[in-house]
Length: 535
Image (cartoon, rainbow, N blue to C red; front, side):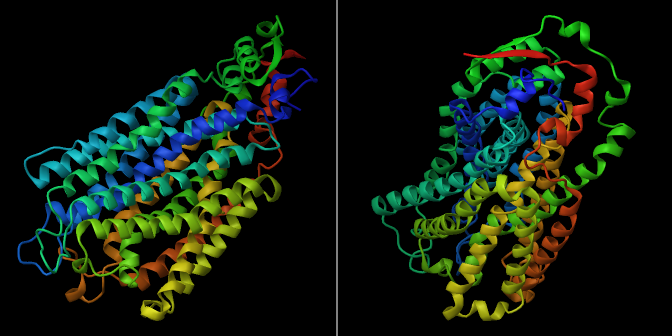
């Protein structure tokens, strides 16, 4: 055992009952993910509006749309920033501490959200370039939140409910997506009521109106609000005792921090420094052969499953509006005004999130510490595969108007099993199975692999889902493989995710030190001997 006696700090953390601080930590960390989801997914709501405002072709029978390269940049640049932020802040979190960089990520999100809404320029190209600049840095801040929030929550949790706490942090994404839909509906409905506009087919110019330029800016800038509301609380959070004890090797400070937040008095032994023993076998680095031997397959498992999951998940999420249009759930764009189109896209995304995404997240929270991460991930990948093929193989059947509701139900089930499945577990497991000194870095690497998959899904699906008949593709795009074949490819991706899940160990009910192999290191070095008494 890593914990020697009842007073050991790590044992106290693992056996602590759920307390107010745990709930506060979930909310503070979770609001970061609320902001993350709102900011990353609200852009999918306004891309059609941006096309109408900045890329309208005079005399065209259809409203303007973003050119392929611009659409790819606007949708993908935040994901590129997120990937870079996950790697950088993941590494930095292990080097100087989780708390030290936690506020920086939130500040970046606030500034960049406001900057996105203030995107300026005298031409469409300039506006889009400014928007992409701020959204890259928005993504950079969001990226840092992934490894830091997961690691902080894991290191403060007890082993009995650790999975539920980390899952609850991540589940706030669902509410962020809902909020994006609600805000878009509210703003578009308000402008639609105040500034009446006809359908595009009636009046191409009047259907959008100059006021529409304010709508997308308001939606993007409101992403700064939840980040601002939690900034002070986040800055007041102390460093995690596990980092302070195991990485910074300051057991006295760790015990003080634990006393402050956990409602118990924990006193460090006076002779801790004299008892430290250097064990070369357990002082290996991240790029060492020993790390590869102990954790190489684990890192491959967490990174590859997250990579494959995000190819499918982001393809579906960022392009819901295109899928809904393709099956006829949304009316043709030229039959609606700009505000009406935005409202209906937002309503569709809201309903999918409400019925599929959010329930999946919270079922994971309730069950993860009972049936385990491994089982939930296998269940999720399995049913995502099944439902993808159910949608893809008889695709023509689903495009018939009388079958549209059935398509939406099954499409919603793929989101349910993504979130009661790998979208939750790929976030949770990397925060549990690696040693404390690499935990944030390895989570960042796994998350960055996921965002690489998201970039492939975002850019690839944009082109792949185009009609095979070149006369029916969107302007500026080459012919693709069609929606049916694109869904088939996503089904195959999920099959590989299912198989690679077998590389990932099950951390349920085990301490972080046990599952990461740090027990042996702690036992030999004794860096955290403490004496504890109840307050």
